[in-house]
Every structure is written in C-alpha cells, then in structure tokens.
Length: 251
Image 1 (cartoon, helix red, strand yellow):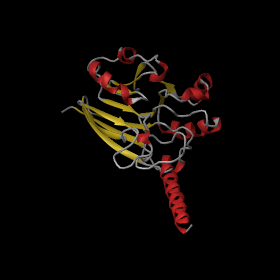
Image 2: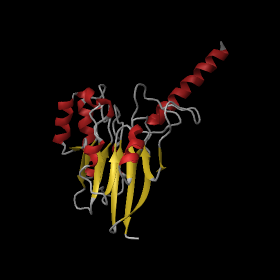
Image 3: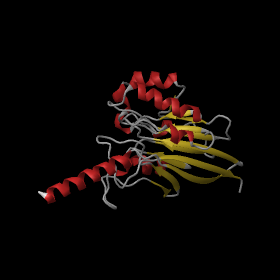
Image 4: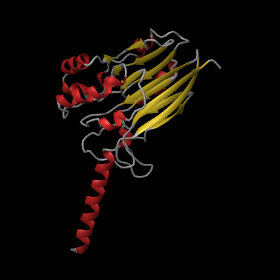
C-alpha cells in the first residue's frame, strides 16, 4: 500500500508539473537579416491559443510596438467562450496592425460569428491572399486558407507579390512549407498547428518540437503554440509566442 501511495503522489506531482508548464508565458526572440533598402520590421506571432487566456502581464512586458501582429490559426475552438475571444483580441490588437490566418479549429466557433468578432476588433483576415504592409518598403504578408478546408491556393497567395519584393508566408499547417519552397520564393515562413507534440519524452513526440531554423535556404518558424488541445498539459514542448526582428540591409 505504501508503494501505491508513493506512486500516486509521483503521478499527481508529474501531472501538476505538466499543468504548470502548459500555462507558462514564453516569448522567444528571433532575428533575420534580409537584403533590400535599409529598414527594420518587427513582427509578433502567436498561434494555437485555443481555450487559453492570454496573459496580460506578458503582453505588457513586450517592448515597443509591432509592424504586424500575426495570429497563426486556432485562435479558438468549440471550448472557447466568446468573451475570451474578445478579451484576447483586446490584448493583441493594441500592439499593432493585426492579421488572422485560419486554423483547423477556428470555425468550430462558427465562421460568420468569428468573422464578425474579428471585424469588430479591426483584424484583417488573410486567406489565399497577400497584403503589402503599410508604410513599409515592399514587404508582404502572404497566407493560405487552412489546409483542412481543401480550399487553399498557393498561387492566389503569391500572385500579387512581385518577384523581388520581400515576403513572409504564413500557413497554420507547416506541412505545406516544402511544397511552397519548391515553387515560390519566400523570405520567411511561419506556422504552428503541431504544438511541438505537446507531450514529449526526450526527442520523441507525436510531432517535432518547435524550431526557428533555415530549411532549404528559407528561414522557417514552426511554433509550439500558446495553448493546448484536449488536456491542458505539456511536457518537453513548452508554450511559445514569438517576436521576429527583421533588419533589411542594403549590403
């Protein structure tokens, strides 16, 4: 009986630890240097919020404003109270112009309902399209519709972008990045969806851990995401959101 009691205590302690990790607020900083007319661009990327309430202290501690705040999909799901969607947008939108990319769970809220909420907060939905960042020198945000809809179009996402302009490509599902690299030019790719596997044992997990690294010549950010699916537990795949400082140099 003593051994069973010890075992149960260990299991409870481990679950509490995973629950604690799931609610950490980790802001990762990344840098990227691109060629062009001298300029600096600052992006904030957050994906896979799901049910989680964004921590206001984390947002308050962010240094300065951003040229674009990018919500990389799964901002909500069927569990998310509508009031929480509003609260989270109230925190994000003051940081800078805010853009939303569809994830596979967002429409569980109701597509028209979520579109209306995003419109109320001045958020631009980006799907199978590209937009030129205002007051920036030929810098584009390009994104596709979520792949689960089977209505995504890479051609539509890139058709506006001139060959020599700078472009960030966003897809909630990073599984398409190799296909994009094979046909189109992007300076940075960003996605989420995989949660880093959410619970990992060392190097082993259902999905790879998040990373910011060069893949076939293109800097690529795959985020572990901010929230969780199913159980609010994480191990070996900490929650993340991201600041990307891009310096455009004439050299």
